[in-house]
Image (cartoon, rainbow, N blue to C red; front, side, top):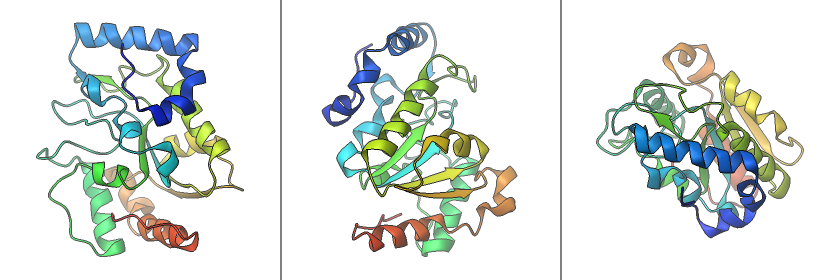
Length: 220
């Protein structure tokens, strides 16, 4: 499979691309996209990286799997294509933003606008087969995204990591908390929303931190 990822990230991650697990992963993805309907579209698999340069990165949000329904996933965690009904977790994210930073609930659930401001919206697994949640897990994506988080932790300073739910918190265990700021909350799914997601104020906390470091806050 052609590696459709920008040069900024290619340079940072080049050691991963040469490893056997990654080559095997790309072969697996090629076969899956040839034989099945998979999401997101091939050209959007690395959209999280292409919309957020490594040099500009300020915030990392960790998700788990892409949405597996038709035309939902767009390559960014929790995000959907414009015009698509907002899934429950995204609804709760946008409701919390509405309450936290006092902005109107948006019509579009496409979070590309965040990515272009320096928010890496990283799913642990970057692809999925249609209608089969978790179908591309344990094929190499997790090793790749673990490496991404580790490299960000090692090579950057002052990044805000937003870890929502036990899965993201476990995946973020490699983050150097002496160099970075980590905010944790329950997952924004309907199961976790009333256990502490609502009222977590991660969006205003993130902007307060960014401003304290003379960085431009995110327009959520």
